[in-house]
Length: 356
Image 1 (tube, rainbow, N blue to C red):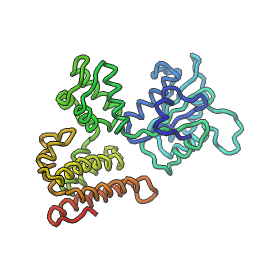
Image 2: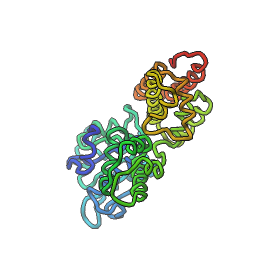
Image 3: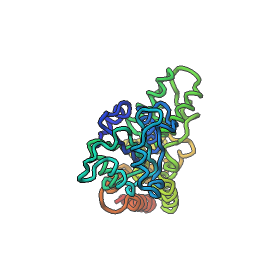
Image 4: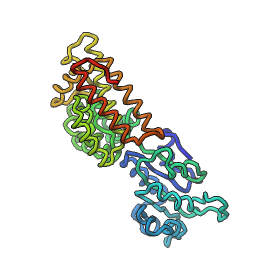
């Protein structure tokens, strides 16, 4: 079965008893790992318990395909339900998982997962993925997507974490945290823990405190990439994009990072259209622009007027939709889109032409 994003937190805290296996996948590896551990703890208190928790990898199944079924069928020496955790998997392991889920046509062996909870950790999976189809179509299994925290979800994580320490967060500080956190749930929590320690006690987190303590965990170079695109530096754009993709950042998080930057440009360009100077428009942005980027962003605002930024945002949103379709590979769609925008920035600065 497939759960909506709104239902996932409640499920992770108290899984439906009829669910015997969960696929945890998506680009936010920290959130995926957090949910893997949380689901494990609904069965056992100690994740490291060797009698009740078995750790397997996709490579293990490649060398020994029967290992998964053996672990699922094994009885705990100390009694109690067991957890079988399978990490670093892909569609190559779909057949082995199909066998233990009991979804093989003609299977009359009963419930093969009666004594175990199987938790499967994967990376990004397209809708056509055999693993996704298997878990989404099963009555005793569930698929849990893990996407980077953003918007209200990220704000809730920030507020809840700080509230637990007797802290609140000011408007500007919250805006800063929302733009500098969210790429990875575990990194987000680590940065917030640093902020809590830095604050030292109950009270309101200020913008200065947030900026002094919290680094950009949402990026791994995403800010650098967005700046290069808006600058019109297509060579640097391609180099940074290649590095991000090699490091495991997905095309959709890349596109969304560029959307965030162009949305800020759109706000500034709108202010310029309303009569403000580029300096005034950029100074008014919230969260505030990092000082070392101020001159570059002012130059970008002069290059990208409101209409052209709107065209760029439309192109980026269209590209995200294409990444979710069965067309060209997402990496190709992402690269083509960013190169078009970078080239448009360079040429448009001279000719005033549109981004399309």
